[in-house]
Structure formats: C-alpha cells, structure tokens
Image 1 (cartoon, rainbow, N blue to C red):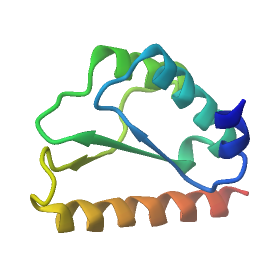
Image 2 (cartoon, one colour):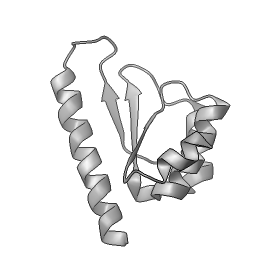
Image 3 (cartoon, rainbow, N blue to C red):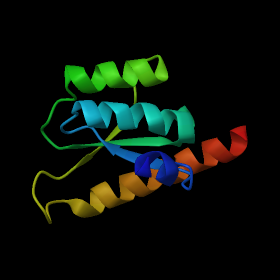
Image 4 (tube, rainbow, N blue to C red):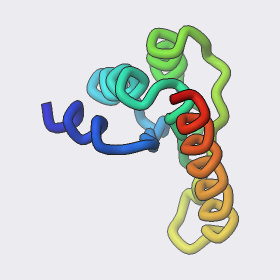
Length: 102
C-alpha cells in the first residue's frame, strides 16, 4: 500500500534491476500502472547483467523486454559523474514523455 500510494505522487519512478526479487517484480508492475511506461527509469550496477527475472518482470509489466538501463558504478566514487549525468537525462526524458502523453 505504501509503494502504491507513493507512486501516485511521482512523475517518474526509478527502479534498480540489479537484484530483482518477487517484491521488486511487483513494484515494476505497480510503477508501470501508476507512472505509465514512459515514466519508468531503470538502473543497474555496472558489471551486472539484467537477470531473467528482471526481464520477465519488465515483459509482464510493459509487454516488451527492451528497455534502456542506466548503469551505476560498482563502487562508490568511481565515475559517478557519468552516472549522475545519464540518470538526470533519463529522468528528464521520462518526465517530458509523460507530460506529452497526458
């Protein structure tokens, strides 16, 4: 209930695909309902492949597998400026897409 009500108050949801549990898979579905496909930004730790569980959750929620993923450094302080820039761009793009479709 807390996740669902929080998602109702945001324009963009950021979801970490590094370790997708059943709970995270459920959150992907809820975020897709609340924020639409346009309002989702996916992140994942550098060097970690997006798991079959993550791909399945995305496919179930969005009806497709191919999504853009912003990778963050595996250790703190390592090239985090690049990650911050990419994440900011993805957030603005997602917010603009959502605004254009409402």
